[in-house]
Amino acid sequence: MAARSGRKVLSVVDAHAPPTGNDLGGGVGTFKRPPVKMKRINLNLPEPLYCDLEELAAETGKTMTEIVKAGLGLANLIYRDIGAHERLAIADSTGRVVKEIRVIA
Image (cartoon, rainbow, N blue to C red; front, side):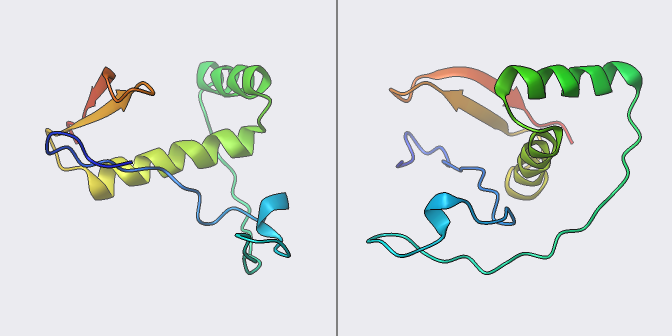
């Protein structure tokens, strides 16, 4: 997707995710991703936040781990690629901005 009116267009990609069906290679346009060593962590969350995570996972059909990874990917984008007091735009399929998140960190 190209940038519109001077805006940076970025996408969040989980470069550290283990390979999925399309990543296994063998066909035209497919590739083989090397295995990634996984690390386990313990995470202490307030109960309301844990419940939110559990509900979001159930609603989306994702695991809680997948939700946390997506959140970390977004945090990485915000803290590394977007400057303080800039805005992160969420656009619909036509490119019209429907929401903006202001970065204050």
